[in-house]
Image 1 (cartoon, rainbow, N blue to C red):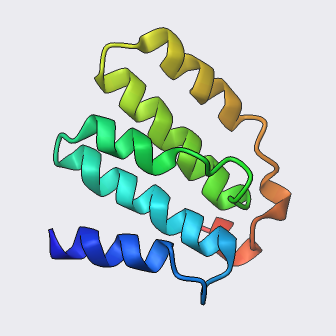
Image 2 (cartoon, rainbow, N blue to C red; image 1 turned 120 degrees about the vertical axis):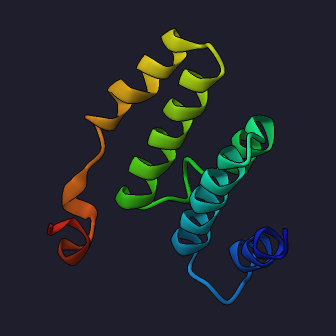
Length: 99
């Protein structure tokens, strides 16, 4: 619980670039759905579309897909999965894309 609170405070920090705060939100969403808190996980991803860089966008779409798939909304999950192919991976830092 404490880690979730800390992550929320970090994500909302004005000291971070917007895209890093968004990436923290994507990671918070993953932590919440791993706890079975699907609705909270989804809310973490709201309003991130214009705040993420390419890496954050890929993570956000992946999280949305995962949430939809695990809450019996397969058709919606496919929509988010298909969106992953549209992410401009060239905008991601090269060091983050290397294996």
